[in-house]
Image (cartoon, rainbow, N blue to C red; front, side, top):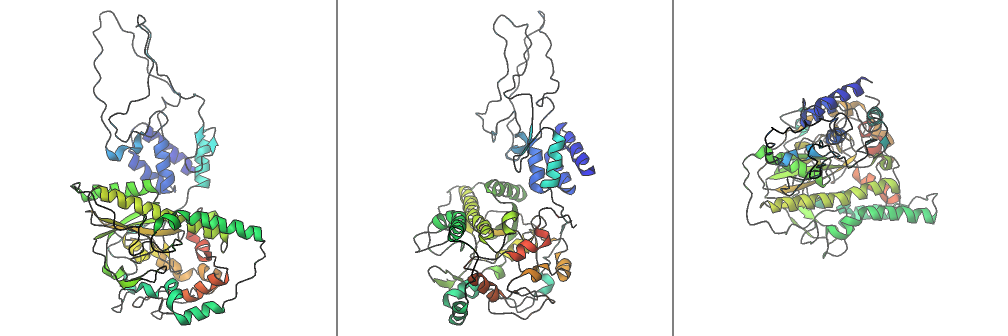
Length: 501
């Protein structure tokens, strides 16, 4: 394959230091590798000497030669060079001054004529391991073929634009949205909608009691971190909601901030650092945007406690993160496996946002973690350059299509904002109706964009494909409470291997 040969050539250039790690990643993604696969290959590339190639023979010391020169101190890598040193003969030292390299052979006293040689701590019978799935291969060519066929995904060209692609569809009627009008919130207070919910008859599944217990256990395991640690001291919290007012736990907003602020001399450099830390903690995509007040909920509504009140967000920036959902599980929608894929990511959202917020507080700046709370995630993600809004009412990204969940951290840390992107989704969704065809509740419109809303759960002031979320949620209820991800699984952009492109 031409792509394999080209990537092999890039690897050789990287090994010979004729190409930087960043340049390798950029070039590999252009050839079709996902960002994660390109980063993994860059991190696992090592020199021919390590792989059992020729080694340099040191000259035999002569009697007249002077003492060997004293080696200078090994330069400590910068924060951004950590991953460049991750290979089989190095430890991950993170710039630790106490780091010592792998020991080498030293001749015994009285035998100085012996030539020092490197002593590898591994067998020279090398095999290759895929950094994504850990499958092993005998040759590098086999590994490359595996990555290209099993992990690489074709991606469209995404252009940075000055304004988000939703801009032409906004009107002067656009206002802040009240979280109380969210369909999940309405299930707690809207008596008319509650009456509709009570009339829904659960579907009779052809499933045994043992299978149902195993499925519920799978979902419960996925949400466990969020359910037990996300919020507490607020009554029952079952996960999924994000931050609750007055709560403790990892979604808390009341954690102390370090007294000393680390000075930010370069906003762009700090932004890159934040993105690296976010990926280290588990985020797959990261973008930064100034907070537009119109995307902040006008009022909060906590479904667990029914607490309700005005909401303001004084912090300037939102660090928006997307976390990939497992495709093999999502494609089993609607069922326990797809629900578990969702619940697992909600737990991961709580973990990633709380870790990143803790890191920023440690730098001396306020930061609050946020899941499905405080602001509407999709427009923030669009503003941060992660993707575009699709017909199915969800964020579509070049990397995962609709197959991700979104979370964010609000902060006053000085950062550099990202521009939004355009990769053609608006035109694509005008003609592709796959999500609408597979929706079991027929909640996704098939016609053109409209200003007409289906219920109070749609925000006014945007010309868009308004999802009938009330019908969607009624299907969930009829499905014994198991959520549906049919539209996500059916979206052509959600497929890991986009052979249709």
